[in-house]
Amino acid sequence: MSGRELNNRIEYMVTCIGDFAAQHAMTPAVAYTFLKKYKGLSFLTDCYDVEHTQSVQTAVDDMYEVCVRNGGRIS
Image (cartoon, rainbow, N blue to C red; front, side, top):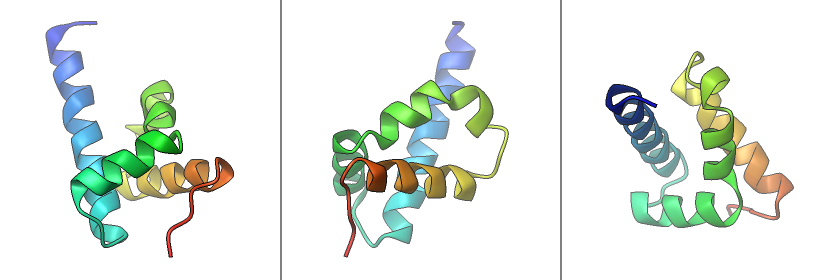
C-alpha cells in the first residue's frame, strides 16, 4: 500500500468516526472506543474498498449495524 493510499484510508476512517460520533451524540474518543469494541472499525477496514465508494452516511449506518450485531447498543 502506498503512502498516499494509507493517508486516504486514515482520513476516511477519521471522517467516519467523527460523523458517527456526531450522529450519536458522542465524543470522537467515545465513538472510537465503541466502534473498536463492537467491530465497527474492523468492518470499515476490511470493507474499505467498497465502503469508500459510497457516502460517509452509508458507512456510518453500516458500522452501526455491525456493532448492533456484535452486541453494541446506543441509548
